[in-house]
Image (cartoon, rainbow, N blue to C red; front, side, top):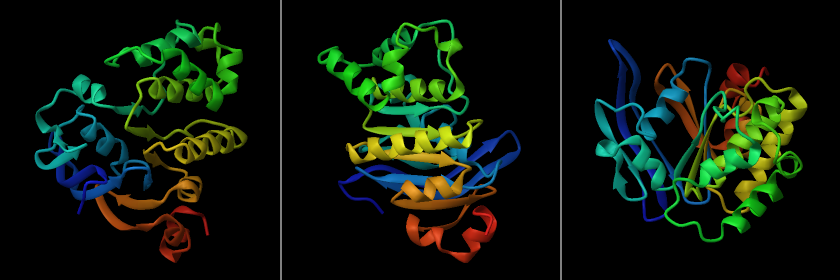
Amino acid sequence: MGNENTILSVQDINVFYGPIHAIKGISFDVQNGEIVTLIGANGAGKTTTLHTISGLLRPRTGTVVYDGVNLSKIPAHKIVERGLAQVPEGRRIFLQMSVMENLEMGAYVRKSNENLDADYEEVFHYFPRLKERRKQIAGTLSGGEQQMLAMGRALMSKPKLMMLDEPSMGLAPILVEEIFSIIDRLHKGGATILLVEQNAQMALSIADRAYVLETGTITMSGDAKSLMNDDRVKSAYLGG
């Protein structure tokens, strides 16, 4: 697995929560410019996998290699500085701060503040609603707008890889459509994205490749479009 175009390579990781074997020897990779999605039911280990990549959890065995570097000894905050941005489940924006201040926090990990204004403009290009609300306190935004802000904040760190954890969680269907069309536009603009999502239909519709996670094990993987038409995936995840 992996070549010079591989931005992320997860190899045979085993992760435990106390006595619970949460992730059982999974391997997958993400190439530059791809959207790769991990789909699976609640509790399948999707978020645990992201937390292991971003350094919040450590694998007992196995390796996570990102941008050519083994992350196992690198602290979580240093991983972010290397251009790996995670948009966590539940968004975790700074609710008491304005939209603009949240975006500024995203830029905080950057080595240089060159082109900052151009980067704000890029965020507003993808999320025009944030521009309209830039002085507004983040806690007063709707759920969909908070999700946009969390994604915009991640973009401000100039990530080489964006990890999105359940971006559709708790959103009305029309907002889910909007968030996914923005993810699709980010991808077309060159972003590399690892997407964890319970809404398998939406995830598979925009991803290049997909891995199905069930109780800590990858049970299926392949081209997203072909998985979308797979009877096992249909019956388990697409309500068909």
